[in-house]
Amino acid sequence: MSFNEYFAELKKVQLLEPQQEAELWLGYKEHGDLACRRTLIERYQPLVFKTAMRWSLPEPVLMDIIQEGTVGLIEAVENYDHQRNVAFSLYALHRIRGRMMNYLQKEGKSNLAFAGSASEEDWLKFNRAILEVEDTAPSISDQAEQNFLIQQVLKAMNRLPDKEQLVISGVFLNEQEPKHLAQTLDMSISHVYRLQKQGIRRIRGMLSKLMHELKR
Image (cartoon, rainbow, N blue to C red; front, side, top):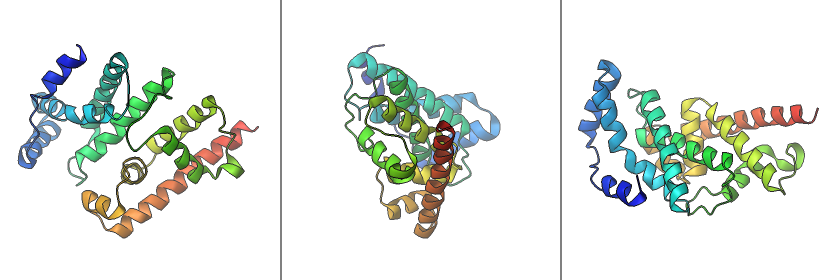
């Protein structure tokens, strides 16, 4: 499918109303209705497209990361707990973007321009803040080491408890204000700060351990 064909199909997608979405989650998660699963994946495809369009990419690569993002969306639909009062779009965004970034890094295209808020430069700033580079991290002057650090942060984030993942992703990748994130996640702002602090501490611990092992 070409980009134009994909975009034409995408324009036909209607966003879900809250009640309709709730019924679809109930049908899929509690009754195993695969038609509900398929509808959820189809109706959230615009989230994949919106995420992919943050990169400035040639059309073939763009279609590749849309495919990867769709895999991330499917994984999110299959693993989402509809009873936890966490917005699915926020939960899914982390997996979609992670799939896309992993693909670009694997294919050696991670230096392509990124038009959104979570550029590689942002990731490296995040790495520095977490790792305290001057003490624990290797030099990041070369691209291979940059990619390595980014991959390790992504892997560490994926090992966090769900709510810590959502807070870290919301604050550092989506640049959401903590008070807005608190509203989205239906929790107090103090709890958001606590989860943010815990998540950073866990990531720092995981990466510090990795750096120590690499120095052996």
